[in-house]
Image (cartoon, rainbow, N blue to C red; front, side, top):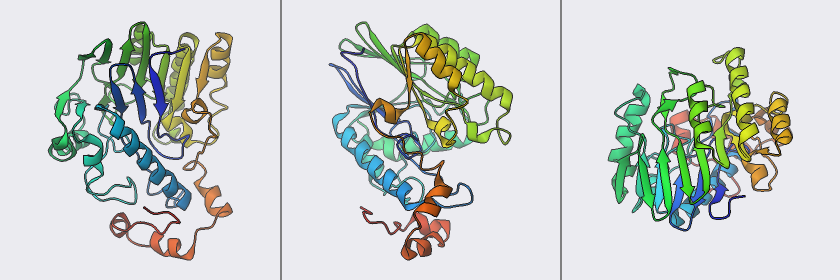
Length: 330
């Protein structure tokens, strides 16, 4: 369907980690979208399983590999599963002090403006990134509402849209559309479906042939997100499935292992329109690995070593400075 735009998902919940990092290549430019990855330090009152650490280790290697190819790296917002910090952390982000430099050095780094339409935590992280990882960039530019041209390829960035619902305490982000000749793909990271109807309208107006979108956070229903909001998000995702030939939906959605049942109408609508809705893993032809969602089962079926158990009892700060004992902990 896309002949001149190559899209490669690199990390996502269906690949065992928190991320939506995607590599996009056209004849004119090579773009690494949201080069971040993380795992939560606690889920179901459990630390990450060794298999989750193996997954984030492999994801970091893949992101580094594609960062070598890329000449542009983007940041849609400043959560750590969407950009890479410049400090040592082996608990959540699998980073050394050099990891960010390896990704951003010598690149054109296109980032969301951290000075406006931003919440307090992301403002601090954006400022910190500019002074640390961002200082290695060949050039760093705020992108909200701007277009950048590379030969026959255009990178169009939306104005800030909510991270989920309007006025979300999680802040705002920018969406990216990559267009080459008559082909167009769109990257809409944490719009959660989208949950906001205005965000839905922006995506519909772009008319992408391929959409990478973060789905609704089913795992937060009744805790931080109402059922009404989830249903609105699913309805909007269903509307997109009718018009977009291929939708890669992943991220928050797959933190719930029973995500397919709420999505049944989305799948049905896509099929009726001869369109596809797939996860990042399925797009790559790989088996889905919902490691976070199945953390309890992992500890039951694959008990960690005694060395790992001792490591997991260390204080969080000590854990972040000490690699967990894995078969391959490089």
